[in-house]
Image (cartoon, rainbow, N blue to C red):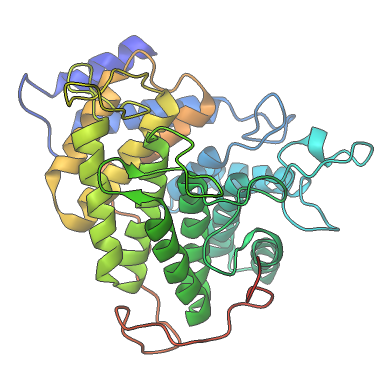
Length: 382
């Protein structure tokens, strides 16, 4: 498999040159990854579910995207089957998804309902609703949005990491949560959801941005508690980019470009290709060597391909392409990373970011937001 991927990735390229977007080499790697994901579907386990019973959201998202092409009904059926399994993890009392069947066991009290997992599962539910148009699918989405509203949302802007635990803003988690929130805002076309997304994006930047290092994780008193993390920049970047696409707010596109440039300047590994998981300056003004994580590089590559689609700047797509080439022997070691890499490579030759909705108001996206009621239960929390 890995040897095949290496040959396919390099077949259409020459040193110092890259194939254009959608070149056969990229498409071939994409098809190989899709086949790898398809082969892991296990109906006995619940579909695209790992050995611990945790749904693989990237595989479900990939399945819905392939199904929309109109010639792969089996993918949609498998995505629906996995979502039905995922729904067994929904907490019908308190709301939200438990992380795994062990957490959902009524004999063991658990509140392991992570914001990142709930955000990705909300997006797959939105995909299901888009595919079916059924009221039942919309109700499922609304139940998760209600859980975000009641439990995970911070009235000042942004989202906490989970039902219990730290309350500080984490850029990665907020990127995923705001991205999902914006998807819901778009399908509902409600300006109150959009305005809370603005508030969240602005608070995230104002709280976590550092001109030298990028978005940082900070403690209760504003102290830096983590080194600059790749995953924070790319997941927050996807949220800013989606807001720019859906709402037309120029500030969000500016922030997305700043984060994309930061990935190229500070996180990109010029020798090995791909991106370092951390970007820590050394005494000589360079960046210290750091590990390159397979799954984080997949998510960074997806952000950069989407950014290239929106800005028409080829630098971002080329950096993403260098990343998946540099990982050829490690590409898709797990179903989750294979799905995320497939989504990243797919974004290099097709722009699937949603179109702006017909918002129910006509306010300028760059005008100050009026004082409007937030979605039910949001105002004044924490």
